[in-house]
Length: 391
Image (cartoon, rainbow, N blue to C red; front, side):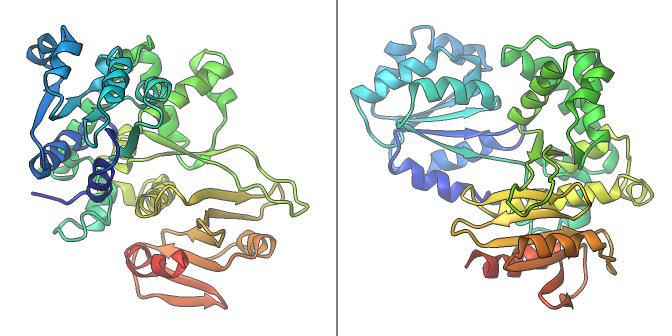
C-alpha cells in the first residue's frame, strides 16, 4: 500500500533551496521509503548510502575524497547518527560548492543530529520530521480511525494482518530502541531501567509529569529521571504538553503533561491486546485524549503553539491552540457521543476567552452544545473545522 506522506511536499520545496535537508523521526517510520521516492523525482543524479551496511561504511573510509567525487550528485545518507564525524565534513563541502540538494540526511536519533548539525550546519540545513502515519494521511485508505487509534501509525504495525502481529512488532520496536538506538546516541542506560521507565510513562500517560515519583520508583535522582524523559522525547516517542501561562490572577498548575505520541505503542506497553479490551480499560479516556492531541499537532505546522490550561482550583481545558497570528482555540476531549462538561471547563473559558471552543468526540454529526461551544468528531474537526480556526 502506497500512502502519500504530508511532509513530502515540504521536503521537495526545501530541496530547491537548502544544500542540506534532514528527515528525522523514529526508526521504521518510513524515512528510507520517502527518501527513495524523492530520489526518483530529483532533477540531478543521486546516490544512496546506508550507514548500517558495511559496504557503505567502507565507501566512507575516506569520506572527503568519496563525497568530493560525487559533488554533482545529491548524496543521501541514511542513519547518519551512526557517523557523527561527517557533520563537520558536510559543512566544509557545502561551503566549497553551495548548491541546492547537495545532501539529504536521514536519522533516527534527534538529540545527536540536532546537536551536531546545529554546531556545524547552521544556515545550511532544513529539517523535516517524519512521524508515524497520521489520521489525515490514511484518509484515502480503507483503514478506520478505530484501527489507527488502537494500532498507532507505525506502518508495520498499522498494516499488520492481525492485532497479535501488530503487538509483536511494537514490542520488538520498543526493545530495539532500548537495546540499540540509545547506545547509538551514546547513552549507556540499562535495558531493565528503560523498560521500567517505558511502562511507568505508559501508566501516567495524560497525567502531569512528576519526575520525583519516577525517580523514586526507578532508584535514580530526579534530574536523571528528567534526562531519561528527554531521551524518550528526543527519540520521538513521547510528547510533553506545556501549561499555558496567562496573567488571570489565578494559581496555575505549572508541570507539563506527558503523552506517548503513538497510541499503538502505548497500548502494547499497557498490555492491551485488542480494541475490545481497550473499551473496558481505565486507560481509554487518556488514550483518546493523547490520540486527538497528536492528530491535531500533526495536522498543523510548527508555527502553532500547543498547551493545556489548569488552575489549582480546578478550572481546566485539555488543549489550548494558539495560531501564528495569536488567535486562541480551546478544545475539550471526551470519549463519549454524549459528553458531560465539567464546571472547570466553563471556568477556563471565562479565564481565557478563546475565539473558538470545541468538544471533540469519536463520532457523530457536529452540533452546538452551548453558545460558541461546538461538538464535533475528530475527523470532522481535522477535515472541516481546522480551516475556520486557521483564519
